[in-house]
Length: 347
Image 1 (cartoon, helix red, strand yellow):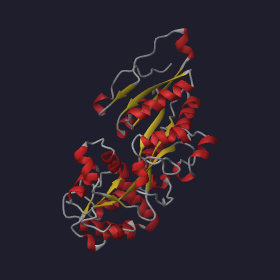
Image 2 (cartoon, rainbow, N blue to C red):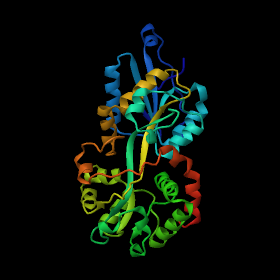
Image 3 (cartoon, rainbow, N blue to C red):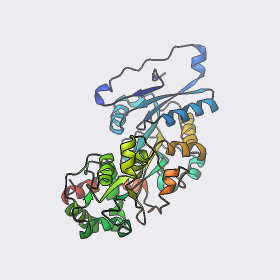
Image 4 (cartoon, helix red, strand yellow):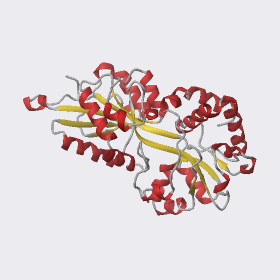
């Protein structure tokens, strides 16, 4: 029997903690009759934990043990644990990370008619190795006092000379930006995307940002006229999760959905090392179900895999038309995107 996580939720902040010893369960006849599902998750929201508890209530023979850490920590941990890993389900954010885990052999193919019905084909692995659970739109945000929102109808408009000195960008280390560039390569080709990057880099007049939240703050303060962020960073601030001062700044920002809009995901798959693949798949099906899926997305003010949810903040922004690029394509173009960013001035 593989070891299981000794507490319900354990957070890892870095690789230094990945040597943690996992204790085996107390061996009783009752314990042996139970199934313990190990979930390695790059998400860290209390509402996720509530959904896991609800799954346990609906499935009395299953207990869920969660290990939370950053994506790269989880990938390294699973690699090092190999077949002895207690993880049955791996939850990751961003296309490149899901595709990387797949290439590393960390997922097993899992055919599920339920998930094929619930998750659109472009948001799941063709072999069933992973399935999207939420959608994340990465879009421009503007300060209307500086930039007319109507002037940005597509991502291409971010390279317009009219935005010189007004554009702010997160640095090229961001996997979200890498996926956006991969998206543009797929839709527009490498040459056009390279020109687009150069145009945007020429419009940036200050240091590239390390994260999205400072970008939202800078646009709200008028230090930037426009930036590119995942919408949930604005949503968190509007919801008051970052304090009243940040809420006030977010209220000065307008979210703009290009036509079409680039969409990224968070997703999950059954691990190659799982001793309980059927129960693990059942959990993923539960998380992707309409009721649970809306809650999983709402935890971080993301969008469900279908529709736009009922959150009043998200609804206030309106809807968008996703560009339809597959998550697998985004992951496959990640290295090309990184090189193109480096070669054309995205710092």
